Amino acid sequence: MKNKSDKTEKKRQKEQYVVEEMIRLYCRKHHGTGRSGRMCPVCQELSDYAKLRSQKCPFMEEKTFCANCKVHCYKPEMREKIREVMRFSGPRMLLYHPFFAVWHLICSRKEKKKQKNGESR
Image 1: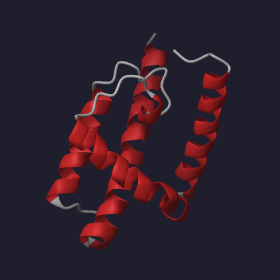
Image 2: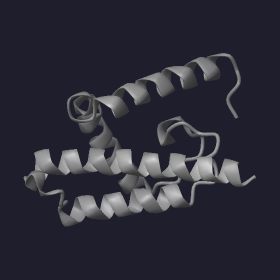
Image 3: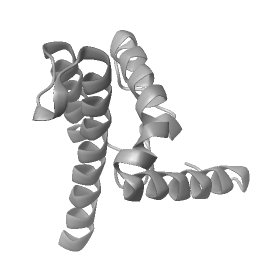
Image 4: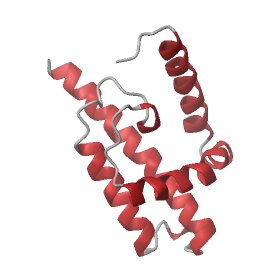
């Protein structure tokens, strides 16, 4: 059981890292925060909120990405903000974080195939 828990926690940390990097990229390009690694207060709030939602996610073990989840736990305004960040940062991740961009594409394709075959929750 511990191994399953460790795997889930590792997955959670990876997801949190990727989301934070996407928000950081968005903030750098839209709010001029530069490469210091710091985010503006609005983006930092979104990042903190995304981490909190990830920590409380009861589906972490099975899910791929929040966009594929049937339960949307983000407040509507935060959900719209994270969508905006994802729309902007997603395509640019290929330049800034190619490994995570390719990983995301592969996982998304697998999830779509799974849903098409009726294997989804």
